[in-house]
Length: 112
Image (cartoon, rainbow, N blue to C red; front, top):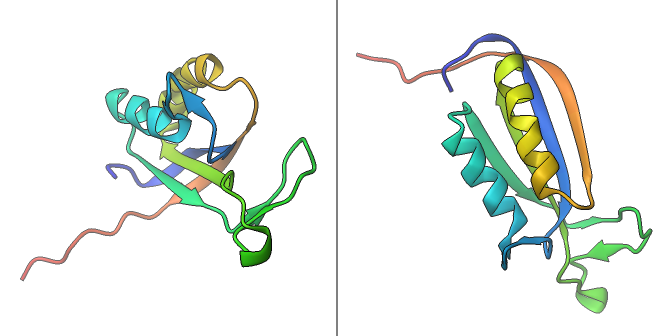
């Protein structure tokens, strides 16, 4: 990451089975974030959750779900994140996106 100080975090809440042109939607979001030059993006897979349908998706063995919750987190300078938001409008048919102002502390490897 190339920033420190104030930044904007965009969090996209999806289902694991959500797709864009037959590929995982989370993959397309990360690819576009990289292509847009954003500082970083991570995909986190949930072990349990529910969304608009109120149907609980879980990894518990007796009720194993394949459509687990997935969260994509992107952090960068506020202007860069806001420039990226129209791409999310194009990609997301159903889901939730949140924006949070965050303080970034960047750590780098120490040189000897």
